[in-house]
Length: 303
Image (cartoon, rainbow, N blue to C red; front, side, top):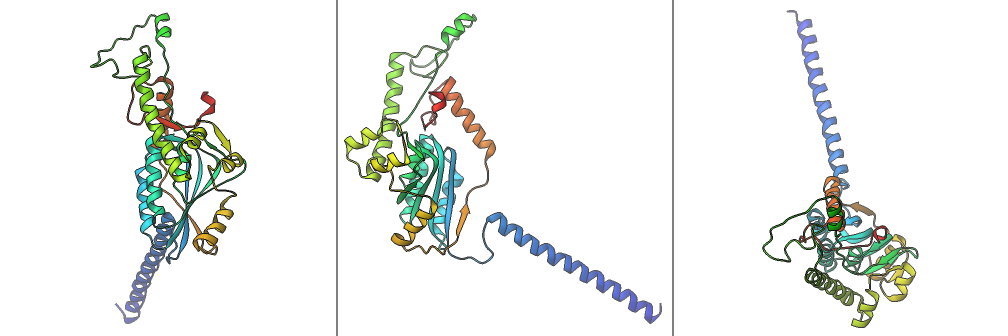
């Protein structure tokens, strides 16, 4: 093989190597960009205001609790805005999120901005923040706890079905649409609902600084517009996110020039559908009182 041929072969090998490393470099850069985009974080860390959306049915979401814990320890997070658009959810879901928000609030300022709806368990979340903002037309309130069932025994009789069950006690599996709702069972379930209601009202009294009579008067289950809620002391100001940023700047020294970054957990569509189906099932045809049975949710279409 001549020297000229050897030179050509070497050049081709060099070109192949250069091409490989160029492609590798491009892939690496794309990978970094994709990872940064997926994490919703800039390549260079800087201070920001986090914005967390609480929408739809609220349940006890461990991923969201972990996120709030992470935001609490992140030095770049200077404040948190919680945008709420939810009719409520399970009592445990609202209670657990309330406590997660309170833990954040002990370290950094947090405000709530209500959207169209922030009722029941969603209002429970709102009162965990330092200040509540709402639009004049926002619907909030509905402070209370709900448990519903249906008695389908007469319907079953008409179609010739007689349900049978063997239970360890008369109150086991109550309420149950397959058997009449006895007075004893109704009293037992009412005691559960009222105990959870007292817990909810206690949080409202503490956070909104109400005396007992006022808290009970406002917590009769009714909903309020933003204007009515402001007048009654259930929230602090009318306005949206701009008003919340202004308050953070004036009262908590959080510069308005800081960027706002949306934070959240990965979509859990399957989990959400499962939970919603479970709640609807328990509302309409509740077969047994489960730990997540009582709900705090505003659903006028079922009234």
